[in-house]
Amino acid sequence: MAKGRKRKPAKHKAKKEPLPYATMLLLAMCVIAYLAVSGGEPYVYPLENLDAYGVSQSSPLGAVTYSFLHVGLKHLAGNLIVILLMGLVVERVLGWKDTLGIYLTSGIGAGLVYIFFYPNALVIGSSAAISGLILAGYAVDVKKAFVVLAAVLLLVPAVVYPGVNAGLDWITAQRTAQELEVSAERQVIEQQLFEVREQIEAGNYTEETLELEQELSLLAEEKGVECKQASVKKVTVVVGRQREETTPVSFEIHVFGMVIAALYLALFRRDAYIKFIKDFEGIRRWAFGVVKP
Image (cartoon, rainbow, N blue to C red):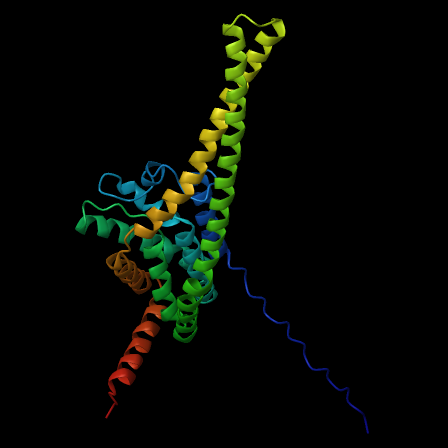
């Protein structure tokens, strides 16, 4: 009786998840744009440097750039968290092209619609584009999107904002100390310069005294510039934080971003759009207790 060979069970290689290129690109662009406009400082100063990239009726082309800029570090950090978490949810299902498409169309479209209804507005921030990602997240995976949004609502105000505030407090303290130190050095040099000039005016001087007067004059000028720079750096943080806290948040632009994301899905990702409508209908029935006969 012939013995048959036992077949070895086939080995299936685990399918590798593609890297989230779109999500990483969006995160990098937001960070790079902020650093480029702020010059590496915690805040953009003066404000006009930031306004030039916002979207308004006088600058409609800003609709392309405003979604990558932010008013301050808290604004930036909070939005980066949402882009990261919700971007991963969306890109895993729709891929990098549609993730970028939703972000860009939601941001650009919502910005243009907003300034149409609010002609005096100037809009800066990625909130509209992020709202588009949030809607897309609910369209492709409602459970994960719900968990992500709940995590963001807990994580950002409880951890991210206090962490940023602590860092800004430390930077402000360091720059205040630097300003005081430079100012004290400048006062010492100016006092020495005053005494040397008194000697020269009294006629009690030598060639070395004149050389010392020139050196102290140059040092006093340098310290004056350093003092001014230190003061500007401190003011940048103080004024920037005040501006960030007082900048209003628009509810409408979030809605516009979601509507445009829904239109994108309806036009280019019909499968995700139909799934979203079905999931939404199921949630509506569950919430209002509607049962099919």
